[in-house]
Image 1 (cartoon, rainbow over the protein chains, first blue to last red):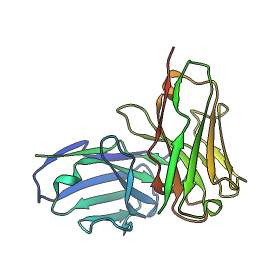
Image 2 (cartoon, rainbow over the protein chains, first blue to last red):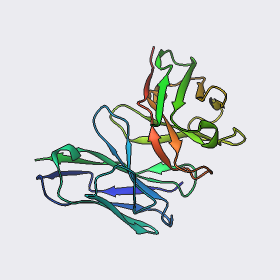
Image 3 (cartoon, helix red, strand yellow):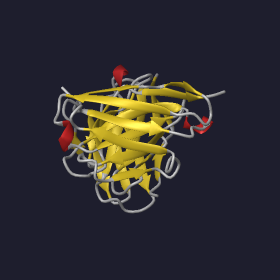
Image 4 (tube, helix red, strand yellow):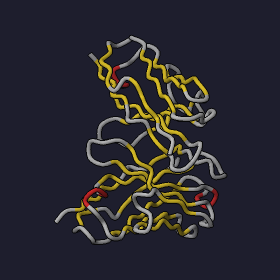
Length: 107
Length: 121
C-alpha cells in the first residue's frame, strides 16, 4: 500500500497570504496524485487532478505541481471561503490511499 | 450536472447488515467505474471498494473484504454496497464517487453527499 504523508497538519493563515501544502508518497506514483477540498459537513470536492491539471470550475488561485514522490498544492491569495481540510489522493494503484489531511484555518 | 445521491444509512447492531444505494444522474452511468469511500467521525478518508463500469471487476479494501459486496444496476443508474457482519469500526459516512475517466483510472471527480452508518449496540 502506498502511504501519503502531508505537511503541515494544520495551518492558520491570514487572508491574501499564500498557502503551500506538500504531499510525499512512499514510492513513485508518476503524476497520479489528486487534491481535494473538504469543508465541514460537506463531501470532498476535486481541485487538482493528475498533479497539476485544474478541475473545471476551480478558482485559478489553486494550483498543483510535482511528480514521482513529491507534490505541492498552492493556494495563492487565500480567501475566507478557502477554510477547509485538504487531502491528497493517489490513484497509481489500488488500494487508493489518502494523505491524513491538512486543515487550513483563516486568522 | 452530475448528481450522486446516497441512501440506506442508519444505526445497526454489531454483526448486522445494511445495504447502501447511490443514485446517479447527469452522466452516462454505464460508462464509468464507481467507488465507495468512507470517513469515520472526525477522521480522514478511506477507500472501500471499486466496481468497473460493466461490473466485470470488483476490488475491496482488506478491512472489508469478505464482508462487503459492491454491485451496480446500469439499467437503474444505481450503485450498491451490501455490508454484512458490521463492526463498530465500520461506523462512518459512506460516499459514492464517480471515476474521472471512462477506463479504470481509480481517480474520482464527483462525490455524493454521503450517508452515515453507525454500528452500535
